[in-house]
Length: 281
Image 1 (cartoon, rainbow, N blue to C red):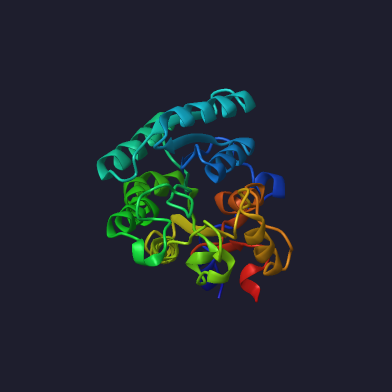
Image 2 (cartoon, one colour):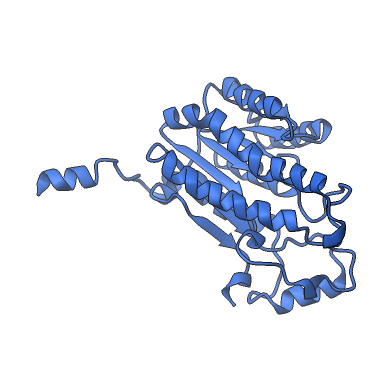
C-alpha cells in the first residue's frame, strides 16, 4: 500500500504559502503579441511576479515602446523580439532567440492573433465576402504559429521543471456568435476567428496530454473586451452578461498568473473562461 501511494504521488505537489506558489522570480517567459492590449498586460503581470519576459510582436517599434514601459517597472526585466508569425522560420528563430537570451524558458503565452478588428482585406466583412486568403492568414497566426512555437520550445520548457504553456482563446472558441449583437453596426465576427480559437483549444488538449508530465498546457478564454464599441452593441452585450459589463485587459491578469505559476501545478488541459458569465446561459 505504501509503494502504491508513493507511485501515485511520485511527482511532488507544489508546497508553500500562496505568495511563494505564485512567485515567478527567476522564471523566463515568452509572450506573443506582446505589444498588443492583452499581450502587454500579460507581460506586465509576469514581470510584476518576478519573471523575465521576451516580447514577440510583428510591430517592432511598438514592441520596443512596450519594452521601455516594462523596463521602468523593473530594469532588465524584458527584451523585444520582432517576429512575423506568418513565417515559420521567423517564428522558430524568435523562440530560439528568447530561450537563448534568458538561458532557458519556463513560460510561453500565445496572445497574438487575428481578431474582429484586424484590418485585412476579406476578413472582418460579411460572410459571403470573407476570403480564403484572410482565412488562411488567420489560421497561420492564431493556430499554426502556436503549434510551431511549442514544437520549438518543448525541450526548453520540459527541462525547466516548471514548463507552462498558455493559449489565449475566446468565448467564440466555445460557443457560436450571436448575429443580433452586430446588427446595424460596422462590427463583424469573421468565421475564421471562432474556428481558429476553437482549433487552439483542441491543440491545447492535444499538447496537454502529449507533453505531460513535464509541461502543462492550458488556455484562457476571455469574453468581449471593451474597445469603445458602438453603444448599441455594448448595450446588447451587457444585457447578455450576468456580471453586467464587458471585460478589460485587467480581467485576464489573475487567470494568467494562476496558470503560469505553481498555483496551478496540478492543472493541465483546462480552458479557464473569463467572460463575466456569458457562457453560463
